[in-house]
Length: 545
Ligand code: KIV
Ligand code: ZN
Image 1 (tube, helix red, strand yellow):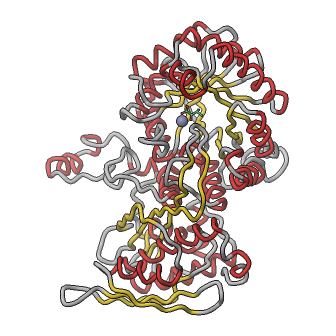
Image 2 (cartoon, protein in one colour):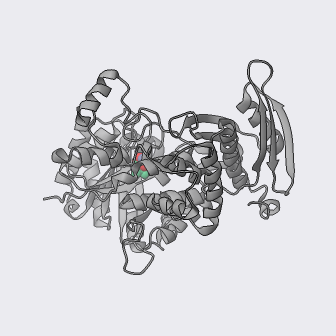
Image 3 (tube, protein in one colour):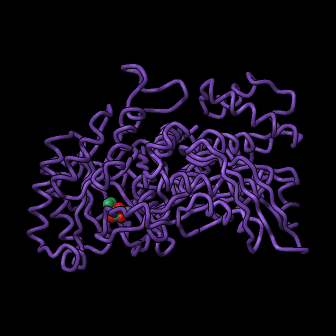
């Protein structure tokens, strides 16, 4: 009889972060990892340490800071988070496995996750290996991983298109060599829920030794079936699900964490499964990941989209007024959404701000509180009531920013129907000097970005620019996320393909003035690009803050 607890293995920082466009800085990854711990995930796949020294360092920091209780023996830090397993990904290559171990070994519960493809198409064309060679490699590398770490996960990549009989053999070998979790990926998002459920049931039924292991599922969303396939896997007996926040990931993405959590929660009678997730943290983590990755969430996205709990149609509104259950299967509060309650105003003090931030799950250091309070006061002068959502936008904009080589010092725009949109930008640079430039553009944002480009001179392509209001009303804060790509920052190797990808950088800015928010978002992405190129590292060190 399989237990009812479903483990959440979050791979936002690995499969999510390695998707084109989602590059996060080390500090951002650490902050996301902290939020995931507060959310209650069981395992954090913190990265692919062999990809680069930066990736290894980010995994190491997460292992030390998030993978350990603050006090020995205490598994529940005061902020409500639990200490998760910290996992590093490795191909079945000695160097990868050693780097993964180097990354995770400082965590109190480390895990190495290694993988090798098992489908005919991958073995023949990508690996150029026979079945026997794959079996031998799995034996050798799982044994190596297990000699370093007690907790080893093995994934037969492209399992969804693999011959089940061969899969049983490979998995049996991995178990014999010490794998403790067997993860079954539908790498290309090809299977249907019925097929995927049958694959998991077949594996559980036919693989010797699997009864002592955790069976895990890892689905991709190419046909929009990732959540359905994951739930089918659970119904067939899988007790770990691999997911990402907002479903970010390669191509159409991975299974969205929030969708599986809320399906298990809302349809508890159907699934009869428990989880360790605190659902009220979902909206907050979703926003954090979207801000840091620069990948915005579509408005109609289940659970975390801006419209997920809005009722526009008159007939729906009428029903809702008569009884919430007419059109609502979940309450927005359950996922921490709809923070429209006015919580603070002009007369609130610093202590009240600190207290409210703590209630929202942010532990703000004194220095940061001083800066945050200044921004809060400026906002309170412009806006009557300040909501939790406003406070979260301020924190992201003021505190969770990369090192600032260039900082916005002044902005003036002229636009409208009467002339050419013109922007004058003043930036404070790493040389401790103010730099001013004026440019003309197709609109005020274009003009401002051209002026910034003229000063910073870091060539890049703007891949995405998204703007939206944090709350309703004319005085709402505007949030902008951008994504830029540049060849100047070099390339990264992907875990699953030999093709290197150009690095991309996301930026976030928030302000009641949307042109200011737009420039801040662009500067935040550019500062990450400059950090990656290292061009201002010596000159800029002193000027950063
Ligand atoms: O999609 C996939 O196959 C993967 C593996 C590395 C688990 O991400
Ligand atoms: Zn994947």
